[in-house]
Image (cartoon, rainbow, N blue to C red; front, side, top):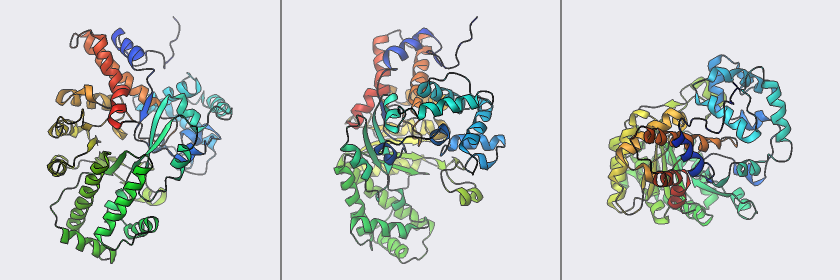
Length: 467
């Protein structure tokens, strides 16, 4: 009996129906990655990476959390150890990640980008380090080539209102065939209690040429940047909030709260929530005016370890799932926009699996027949973008809504080697449907179910975003 590669053609596909759905209806479709945190500078300058650590481990807090759990010293994670030694420590860690999605992702990425099918461990680490580095330095592994290897058609990075979009301009004038757009993320202008808020507004003032002394000034400055982003091809916004804010407020209250903040006076939690509600409603009404899609990533409890946050800063692996109440405020928020006929296309990503059914039913309240899948329950993200999390999201959406209208997967990643997550999602989707065909819960109608798979994999997103 010959040993079968761990990553093989039918990885995660458990029967012939799943295999047919994946290979005939999903595998070869292009990728629309409509939300990620890739560097547009790296893409525009077509950066190459010196070694596998630089492109694969540096900045990847998923891997960092695993290494810390195993007891790996921080010097091999974010510290001063050499790139080679950091990679060796990761290779030693990989066997201990079994049943964590990192084990699947690691071997998928080695296979798809480098044609390496060996299991990564302490024995193979040195050889894999050398082989990947040789390929990365071959001239065929620049950032643009990495995106093309994965058949990416559209890539949307994420930028704040103060970004000049310099690199997006550069890419728009280039002959790079992958469309690189942006998503507008104004959280820094919303979260009035954050330290440095006034300093941020001063930067926003500089870039818009508008004095921001009143709440009206702030709205004008943000609309100025929305218009600028729109003129440069932006069709999406994105928000990373613990929960959606919705408090009743008056114009006078909001003006007073903003004035207090600009005068460096303290504001209460209640005042902050009123302000955040007002500015979020303003932004979302403006998105509707421009025909954008708005995205909300809710449910993360960030920067839990204050000591390590002070040392390393945000996005270094100290975040977790939060248990914020979501339903009532989200309902009131969407209802306020819908009541003015100002609810644009909306995607809600949920981080707490306990709220999956809340989100899956909430979207049905505001799908009004005007647009196919107007309000979407977004794919499993962050801690839920793995087989179990994806399956639970797909099941909740299927049970409470129409999975056939779903716009599918995205990477939400900072890594140029993360795009096999689309393949991973597509395999999970096809196996879920294939298993139900096998059990007689779905008909053996490959034409229709295959079309549904193709739509979820690619065509629904293409239509939804009008790329």
